[in-house]
Amino acid sequence: MRAARLHGNKDIRVDSIPEPEVGLGEVKLKIGWCGICGSDLHEYLEGPITSPKTPHPTTGEMVPIVMGHEFSGTIVAVGKGVDPNAYPVGKKVVVFVSRKGGGLSEYISVDVKCVHLLPDHISLEIGACIEPLSVAWYAVKRANFKPEDKCLVIGSGPIGLFVVKVLKARGCKWVAVSEPATARRENSLKFGADAAYDPRSVDVVSEIKKQTNGLGVDISFECAGSAPGLDSAIAATKARGTIMNVAMWGSRPNVNMMNIFYGERILTSICCYVGVHPEVIEAVADGRLSGVDQLITSRISLEDVVKDGIEKLITDKDNQIKILVRPGPPNSKI
Image (cartoon, rainbow, N blue to C red; front, side):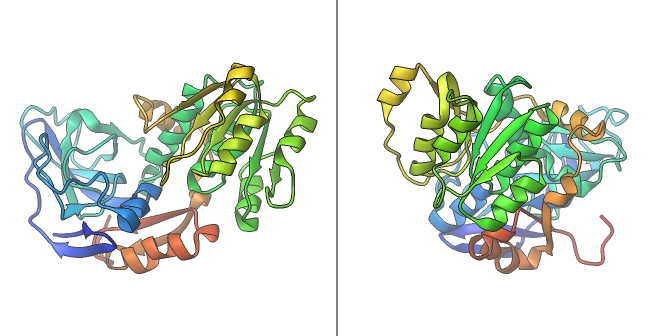
């Protein structure tokens, strides 16, 4: 089968590799779509970071390693120990995490405990967005968000937009975005933000204070991995409010701890998510999280994953939100 594998820094190749067998307690999936994540860009530009250069003690994998963790697929086989009635062949699914392999391949075998069934009316394209939506959902949940909270999102790249989308789905009455790129600010308003500020021309903290009776927002979400953005998030958050870091940082920031100290603010972070996939799937299924397809800006083939996927997210990042990759042959049925 074909798979996009990371061989090293700025080195992703579409290789021919053996199709996986289905093991004990596993299901084998035919991948429908796989999204490209910001962490994939970090691996490409700066890596290998999390991809091991020596055999991983649990999976035994090492570079070259199949990329992709935002994927959906269809069950094509079940292993011993898996109830075929609970996980029938042909059923659409998403995966919480795969211990081996990745979504930028035609097939993958995964532990059944990591598989979540999709309702029939949710497409595989939307299914591939469940993983990044789960990151945003978990960030909002871990921040102890309440519908009456006023919020600020720093950065309206893909994850920032997903956070805005989730906040609105969960009843947020007012959320502002700080984002220097015009196209991204416009996208944030399109997807539900009540205000969008350009930090290059506007004092974001002052504007936030005007909108909150001088108090600041209840929760700030740092989704840019930017030191000035983090400073703004802290300063714009009210006393005893929460600053939730969602970004993966490429460098170590300096944090003004006295702003945290005097305001008794909570500065915390998420890494990925725990146990929220069913909640997100339900929210998409019942319409609370609607319009997810509008977050998909490109659909490409596996052969074009670098040129029209990775590179486009680097050179045209302001106009791209979520790029989906179809690993199967162009004329094959998903």
